[in-house]
Length: 491
Image (cartoon, rainbow, N blue to C red; front, side):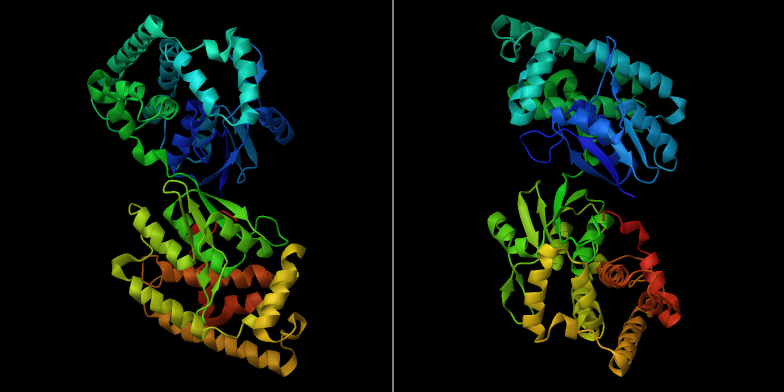
């Protein structure tokens, strides 16, 4: 199940920046635990956390305060705050994931954290004004009020200038030099040699913070990269695979069950994002809002079977490339090209065959739609029902209420549906394995799975219709969907 990770936004959308938040983000990425980010502005943290029952975080000097990071784990219905407590929770709850405290080193790692933080004092006066300038206006007020109260100075008075700046910057170099002396004793890429641990993610979180606040093209960040034989740059580069991919936005269509993805067209993309492990957040768009939103954002229309253009979903926005992509196949092709280090959905150069399979599958499967459309209509939110009725009745030439077959016609059409799936089953069993390509997952499996989910959530998993589908052809349709359980999260 997908965890919720509470992070603090700033002016660059969907960009995590705080070292405290990066400690947890690094660990979630390292452990491969799926999560979605919920962005919470500074003044909203305490009210939200009190509402949800998220415990406050201890602060040095006594007292408590509410701040990020925090997570919610739906598998245990648990909220946890504070980066170290989160790490301890994840270690205990997900013991089969890589440990961030290997070889019983947690006590030493906690002591290292205190030593690191006590040693590193010089950069804050350079960083705090930079953070303030990049926060959203709603958080700037809170940030100014709290930081000026703690420091006894205006934000504008913090950044040193002239000789004071040179001296403080030199002190920062010296502080990092002392820490570098500790780290090189590991004799490898990481603090413990050849395996990453909490200490590496602690150090990396500060480096990400410096880089994003100072700016990767700034002279100050270039200084940090160059100090001590370029090892700070190397240390951050060594963690690249755990920096994670920037969170994509996935545009989906809601219905009356909140946060439930239902459409087969949308599930094609959702499956692939989950399979590739690409983090994303869902933005729900009612049917009549799709075209205005797509035009506003510059999302390309989709081509219908008759060659005409229309605006529909799925679509994604990738902030790492500032790119919008629509149409499930085009999205898959984009993700293959843009994220080549993720598992391919077209392995062994099979894209051409997979596209042909898609057309054969769609051409073969015609019988269930008249059973499906009236139920989909009944489950849509009122805002979408009017659009759905108008467009579908225009295309089909019949009222929604006239679509569902009854009596002998229903029996005949249901038998036809079973026959259509039987034909597709004959194609799929030829692989001799769990998937269309045997033991390798691919686009074809997610295509089939997307239709099966559509049938299941539309009719209802306790309905006789879905039970029929599960039982047909040796129960293999149920097995095929069960084989994709690991990729059904996110909605």
